Image (tube, rainbow over all chains, first blue to last red; front, side):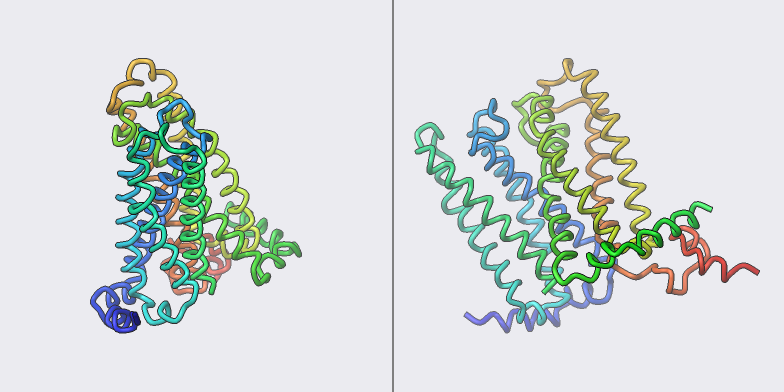
Length: 158
Length: 192
């Protein structure tokens, strides 16, 4: 599916008018993007490091996952909303940027992984899940979200 | 006087070959900057969880002191990495950074965030026995948590805006801005 029409529309949308004309607004939105990314990373790390038995060992892992999942969703909404606004400033440039597509692919993979695999699986009592499955889940999660953040940063350098 | 001293220091750093090497390298500067930004997820991520607990917004059934103590170590590790990479980024472009209004505000906010963290920790240790298990901590603790989040948000935005040249010394700026940014030569040129 070619998304060119979407990027073409975004490039001439009202969002693009604002993001291109007002550097200050762009910088503030970018701040929310970075703060959202920090919160998302924090929730992923606290949850997954608990699953790996590294952090908060004396708090039940079910409780840690339940608490971090809620704020993960909040952070994801902040990151995606601010990300769309930021993309509008350079929509056509991004369309032709390979690193941007690497980020989008890993983001889609991350969202699918969280809501279709990690969350449904971790709804069960963690004692009933094979420990290696839990560890694999945590390592996969950290790897995916690290890739999302790293490829996002690298867009600026490519 | 202070501006002259800071500029002299920055110019001295600028004469170092390593400073030039980092600045002119194809990938090294990008790697350092990427590490600096990505470590935000460790440092600020942990800080977010601690501050949200202090606001009663997360882990209401876990003692606040337990969350703070357990996440302290990864948070400090993240902070140390950010400090080292942050210094290297400054070292690579010392003169422009020294004369950046955003960098200066960032340093002030960092100091304020440090003072707030120190006071916050002292307040927490002194009184945690009385509210540690409360789902929502007392007002003074919540105010400290909000101050922490606001100050670090300020550090993030000023850190990001260092890249913009809106108030660089070569631009036409009001005299106050030249002073605040430490534009020594431009200020000297304005003197009668």
